[in-house]
Amino acid sequence: MKKIGTLYRESSERELKDRMGKASSMFIIGYSGIKSNDLNALRNKLRLAGAELFVPKNSLVSRVLKDRKLSGLTKFVQGPCGFVFSLTDPTGVSKVLKQFSKDNDKLLLHGGVMEEAVLESKDISALASLPPREVLYVMLVTGLKSPITSSVRALKQMMTKMVVALNRIKENKGK
Image 1 (cartoon, rainbow, N blue to C red):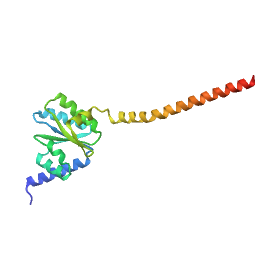
Image 2: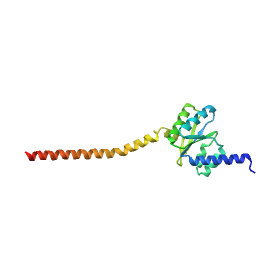
Image 3: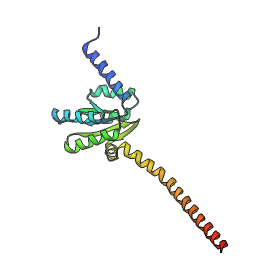
Image 4: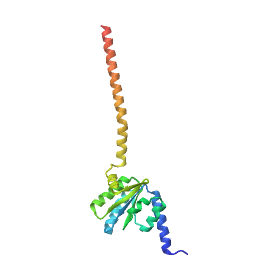
């Protein structure tokens, strides 16, 4: 029969691996000195943004990160650390984290991973400054549409000039 501590560690490890597998991105935050009410407020804001905060033991995290071949993130796992798993758009989650860190200077943005790319603190800040995904899609479509629209306008002008020239030739031959 296994000890309760062993069962707890195995359960926590499974939970952490499961969350890492489902998440599109993960952020590591330091929450030392933050009141529990403020941490609960952060959890609620993250939940609204499509993310969740998980606080496992650092030794467990280091072991799971090595198993997942993300050992580059172990440098961020020092002191009381929380892991924010984003299930949706990472820009919205990074905006919530950045805004909360502005409001509460004890929250530290250590780093994270987004689609297997390791992020530093400055990368999270840069990610937070991006517009939402829908706005980026509109910008992309507009950028792709612009040359096509310009080409259509140029062709239309050329056809109009040709029709005007043919009408003038017709008028001159009619005289």
